[in-house]
Length: 143
Image (cartoon, rainbow, N blue to C red; front, top):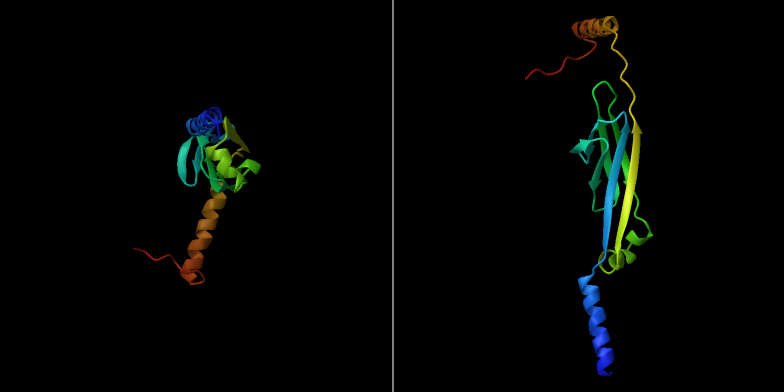
């Protein structure tokens, strides 16, 4: 191997080490209406719209909460793209010559809570109290 080829091999090796590849993964969660508190895997991450990074593919527990609206809880599966599967992932994570961006978007429509019928609530509580007194329903253990 001549000196020119050796220099070329060294330069290419240095470029591979200095310019490592990278996969940037981000999850964008939006809701209608905005302003819902978002939790990913039981960790609060912010109010919608919110963008959070993630490292691994797989199933994530997503929860959205907002006053006056029903809480949404979803187990969302994120499947890896073709470049995120073994053994290709080794090269895309470490040796790609440019940054690869994987963006996932989740949109949710929040449903308003129905107002509570107070008369119906009192009636159910009264029925429950009678059932407990008659012994057809066991009372919770008091601590």
